[in-house]
Length: 255
Image (cartoon, rainbow, N blue to C red):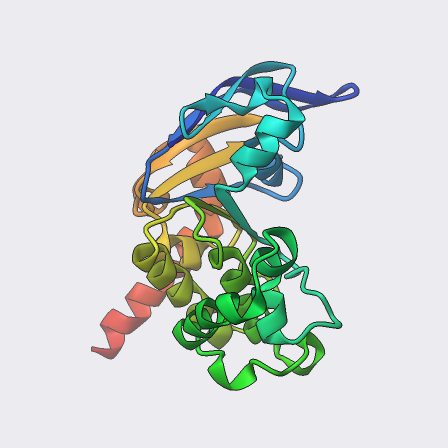
């Protein structure tokens, strides 16, 4: 579905990505991990064709987005939904209007035709009772759900998530992670999630790629975050591994 082939990208004298290659399998959730400033969010911008690498190719659904004209890129982006870290909702529109924004204002479809689709998504995401509320009246977790519903309204083939659980409390983090997994399965989308939240990645990702010092390491299944012997994986996940081991030891003592 998506593949990076020898991608190199620099901003001025700063090299962000160096010969990055990895693939995203259709119908699966791939998590892109990395330290702050490693270039992992740049991966999403490359997939959408918002920036172009100096070398290499980014293949999305069989097409090289690095060579596309802006018109072709617009068509390619219609296959994608984006859930932003800060939600990017319209403050002056209520929940239902935010979710129905794309089909109503971009596709120019009548509201009475869009409304049943909006109501279905709101029901799926536990937002039915909040349809008339403004974003400012919602909790952070609820706003994140609205952002997910707004991305699903036009049935994208690909969903991109930029730190989808950042800023949420542990309970809402778990709720949003479960919703992401459920919606990906129900709507049969291919997911790419940029995150630093290792427990969420472990729970919902099928495949993990680590970006560190501009290079990509294919970790594989999330369980490899705990048992991989690759130095870069050990270095990135060491504190999490230690916490898991200590927690498991404490649970064994209690038993």
